[in-house]
Amino acid sequence: MGGCPFAPLAVGNVCSEDMVHMFHQIGEQTGINLERLIKTAKQLEEWMNKPLDGMVMKAGDHTF
Image (cartoon, rainbow, N blue to C red; front, side, top):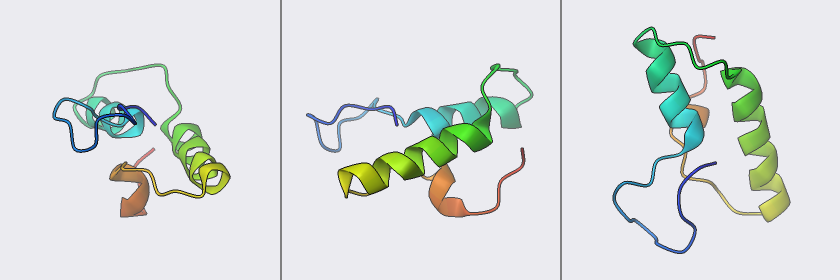
């Protein structure tokens, strides 16, 4: 969900769910429920009728 909607392809903009997933994979605790974050991002895609850029939610099976 993170990133900047006004700067397409701008470097440095990373989706929140991708960052949370990365931190979880390296063993860092974020206090964020990744499964719920991904569900929220998918719901936002539906509401906005626009695909979001997150890679983790597109990957399918996740380790929660």
